[in-house]
Image (tube, rainbow, N blue to C red; front, side):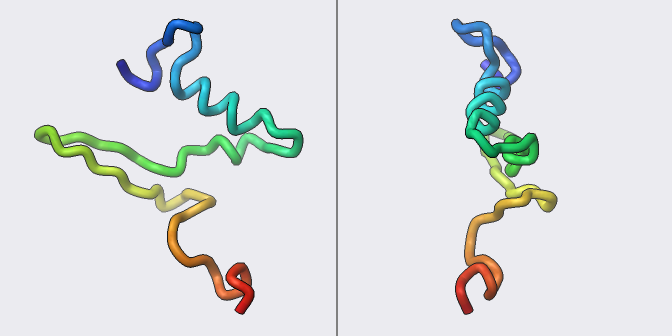
Length: 67
């Protein structure tokens, strides 16, 4: 099954993700924007943080970290 195939409730995983991330009172479409790319080659799965991701893992900026 892929994230675009409907599940038992008729929604794909991508649709469920979008619905969940945009259901908060002050959420925006940007909250549901993709943040990772997943590829698989020869049975090895690779997960990369997208260059255009608004939220990235790791330390933030000095301002955000209170420095």
